[in-house]
Image (tube, rainbow, N blue to C red; front, top):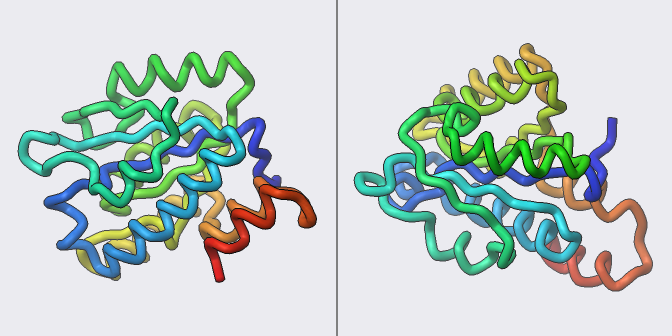
Length: 184
């Protein structure tokens, strides 16, 4: 199944100030998540951002905050799975009522909060698209193991470019011209 911008929700997990510096290739993860956010903003894909224990881990990094669409929802959580947070579930439920049933998931850490969120969404029989190059862990081995495990659960593993071009569907329009510049 290909992604459809009209059916997608972008879920950005815990790209926070005190966490990003500890993540293997953390700056690349943030950069790729920024590309996804710009695509979501331009194409009208709703965004939910989670922050794990923001008192301890800080808020979302400035590079991500700067690219958030105005309608983006940010939720603080203590549960590792964002899907187990009441605020997240309520916001997602409203989006699902509007026909949004494709979950595009990225963030940190792949083997903890991203994995547990994806597992819970898959348990609800929602298609999950794990953006592997916009997700990261402190150790590459943990990232790889989590990607393999989520694929085993049924998540489709994709890259930020795959998401962007599937959302776009075609070249030759203003959206393509603007967004294709992000990946050059």
